[in-house]
Length: 197
Image (cartoon, rainbow, N blue to C red):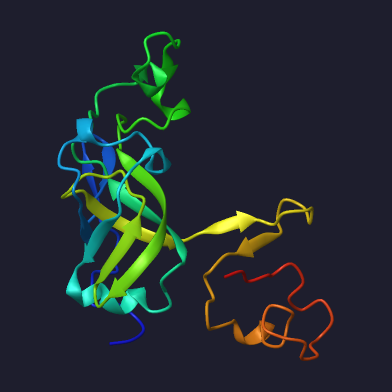
């Protein structure tokens, strides 16, 4: 199947107590050696292991273009996190002053979304091996995004580097740029776009 997904395309909003409620469905789940939140480091780079992300089989086509070595961002639903806290001590350190949850990276928040920058270690059908990942086994994955980084050495705030998003491929309008070789191109057509591996 290509193009549009068979999944619902209508709005998933419902109204409860005068507020719109939106439904988020997992696209897959984390399979990890970390079984409990207390076993997990606070951030991936603080010693988290690699883990598998198992996508729903009907979504495997959405992994086309993701390759080993690529950096991506997993968006998870931290299903074991508290949702009733609005203030806490950052990093669970009582020596730090209380802060609002929106000023922290705590999993405790009204909508416990986790953002996990990871590197793809392997792609096998509808499964990705990624790391390091601090999410525990069974954590729902709600989305996967390619990772964008600001270009080093100037270029202004809007000049972004599409890092690893185009491994082995390139937008039609940028073919022949310095990202793939010295083929002549229209002046300025792809200035600021740089693909790194």
